Amino acid sequence: MKCLTISLILVLSLFTQTSGFRCKMEPIVLVHGGAGDIPDSRVPLKIAGVKKAASLGYKILRNGGSVLDAVEEAVKSMEDDEAFNAGYGSVLNLDGEVEMDASIMIGANLNSGAVTVVKDIAHPITLARLVMEKTPHVLLAGVGANRFAKDQGVPTVPPGSLVSKYATEALEDFKEHGDNRTEIGDVGTVGAVAIDSKGRLAAATSTGGINGKMVGRSSDTSMIGSGTYADDDVGAVSTTGHGESIARYCLAHTIIYEIKNGSSANVATSKALKGMTAKLHNTAGAITISKSGGLGIDFTSRRMAWAYQIKDEIHFGIEHGQHTKEKAGN
Ligand code: ASP
Image (cartoon, rainbow, N blue to C red; front, side, top):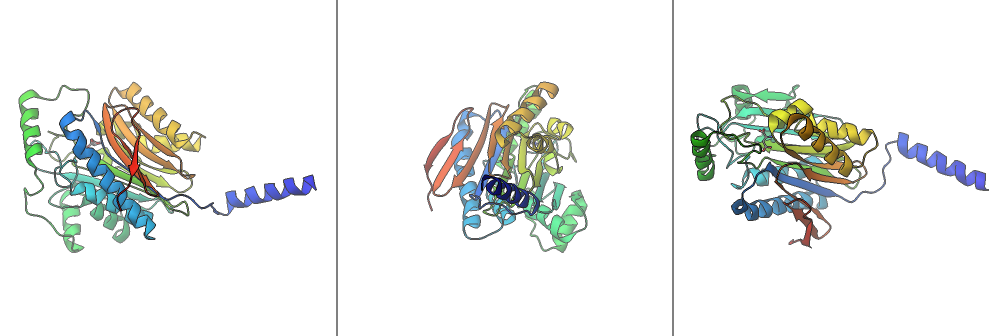
């Protein structure tokens, strides 16, 4: 009898490992609003923005939408929000222009799409999704990406309309004082990761880059494996912080690698961030969901806004060690 029970357990566990069968998972959309030296005056705006984005994404999942729809919707809401460095409110390049990057990935088949150095598009994340769905490519850049947007009927906004007052002041400040800070001052790259009840994963990230960057600079956010990664067999990650360091360290994929090697989402996220900061002396943050629904939220910067909703409860934070819960609105 004992022998029969053990054999049954063995057969069942083999079946779940090889057949792709997964237990029912609690759907989650986890978002971030950028890691860095966020000034006190910007904290309430960032918290309100991440809570709204997490809630919107969660609603999509609850109403039967896909993880891809959920991460896109969450990111779009932060692209519209001036409090974040993505879409409207993006930081400016040295010529005072907004040039944006975004990427998106599906864990089921590793399909991914990205855009870099795009102008005058309100939702670069939607354009990244179209690159994934409508082209044979992973990444489109600059004029080519903007031409593709036009072909796809993605509306463009008038030149200069994504430039906010705050971003203009930040560039003036940069030109006057230079950037000798170790943390990125004007931050707010946005990202989202999601898991549905069947364990399907997706990730998305969008940014205006770094204040005072050279014209034409591409960021980690447009690079699959650095800014964004999702694999249903492992987990989903979105990163933020010093882009050149994140790119050199392939931060998103390093977190995936740690999970593959047996770490929880939480440990993998912290370990990779600490490793990057120790080696490259710059800061970053990341959000992670593992295939089993474990969460990782950490940053080596001073602050990073994050939020997620589970059932009717919103969880959020921005300081190290902060984890606040409250009842979600509907
Ligand atoms: N990683 C972004 C970049 O370097 C900035 C950020 O996440 O705040 O463009």
